[in-house]
Every structure is written in structure tokens, then in C-alpha cells.
Image 1 (tube, one colour):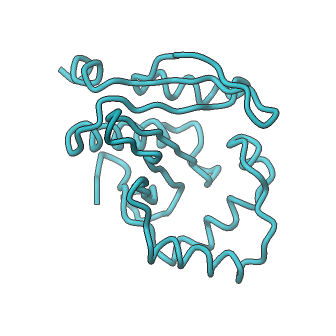
Image 2: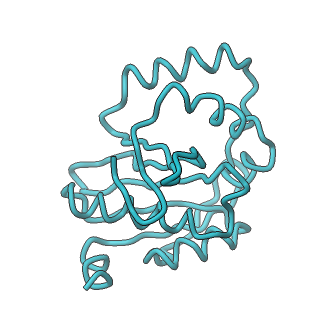
Length: 173
């Protein structure tokens, strides 16, 4: 478990499946994430989710985002871990709308970045977010990410952002 002032990044659990399913079947949330709307039953999803928990990928570290009051509000991860390039992609979703625009996303991102740069040998963390998602871009900039390009993929236009270990340490001192 990784903790900060108001949140904990903890191992995902089977109990998280209900929230995750609700978020992955919510059209607004999936649109913000440029993800397809999940169209399977909860029972089918639960089988897939249990498998993911039982056989985690070596190229992905996933966490549930929980408040210090133990309320599951979202998920974050770093994935596509490339040891040769010493980089990974970051993803986050605060699915519980009651926790939007209150700094929980930024706190989760900075907590995860701090963990990555203190406990791994990764030197670069990058992400992509929809060009239209200005709120997310502001959050990521607040967390130390800078713009590094654009990507057109699957009918979406993404802003690419990155943060480097060296820059993170400079900002941290």
C-alpha cells in the first residue's frame, strides 16, 4: 500500500469489481477515457476481473485509489513497462464523480509518480489524454507532466505528455 495525505493506492481486490464495472459501463466516463463502453454482463466481467487479479501482467502495476476513509474512488496504473527504455505509461480514472475537481486525481498521480521514481529504475513516465479533456491536461501539468506531442488513433486526437525522473527530482527538492 502506498499512502499520501488523503488517499491510499492499494492492491486491487475482488470487492472493487462492482465499482469498476459501473465505471466501465458509464458512457461519459468511457468517453473521457477514449475507451469502448463495456458491453458484457456483470457475471462475465467478474470472470475476466478475477482472472486479471489471479494472473497479473509483469508489464503492468495496477492500484485501486481509495480515500483514507476507505472509499474506493478510482484506479490508477503504470503499464507498457519497457525495462530496456526505462519507461512506462500512466493511466488514471477517478470514477466516483463526488471526488472530481477536489484534487484527488492529482494526489493519486503524484503519489504514483513518487512511488515509481523512488522504487523502480524507470526514467520516463508518459501518458496520453484526449485533446478535448482540458481538465485532465491541467491536472497532469500540475503533477509535473509536459506536452511532448500529439497522436491520432482510432478516430481520437490525443495530447501526449511526459515527466522524467531528473525533472521529478528537481521539482521535489
